[in-house]
Image (cartoon, rainbow, N blue to C red; front, side, top):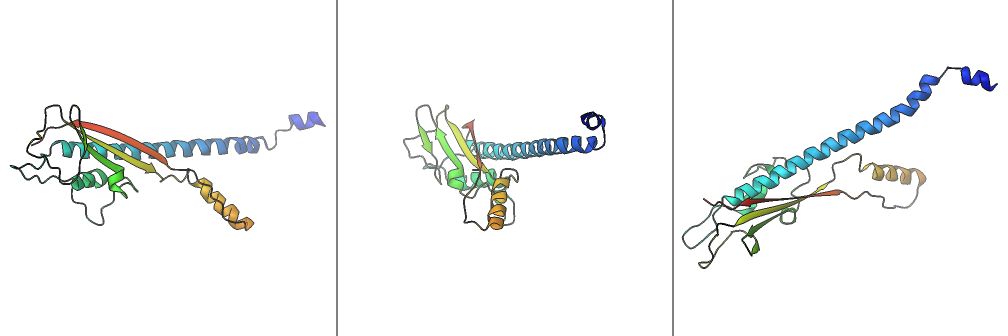
Length: 188
């Protein structure tokens, strides 16, 4: 009986396929998800660098000069890729920019001082921008766009609705990507 079963080749392709297809599918989804995550990260880093470049070339308001640079413009450049986005313009990264003051922090750094910049950036008559000054921009982004990472919640909701059970929270927390870029202050 066992000899006949061991020598029988019928259905061997089906068994091999049932083993290989889930593995190949998961590998493909992982590659696509990783590529999407790296693409979102690249767009996010570009936005942070663009905001740092913009602020590093801005002169602060002094008694002699009224600057037109604004931190809100730097945030728009970071979030949308342009200084004055329209209401229908999509953000660089979906979901980034919902809480601008927390998701993009801009600091002025001198040799011994770190200042959180506010709009408008004002220096009093005693302060001068030194040659060692820099602008530091720190951005945070929660990567939520993943169908793969949100699949646990979808399965749990489906199971709850089928079983008629009470609501239970099953969530995978979003990945938080943080990036800091520092530009030497140039001014205009």
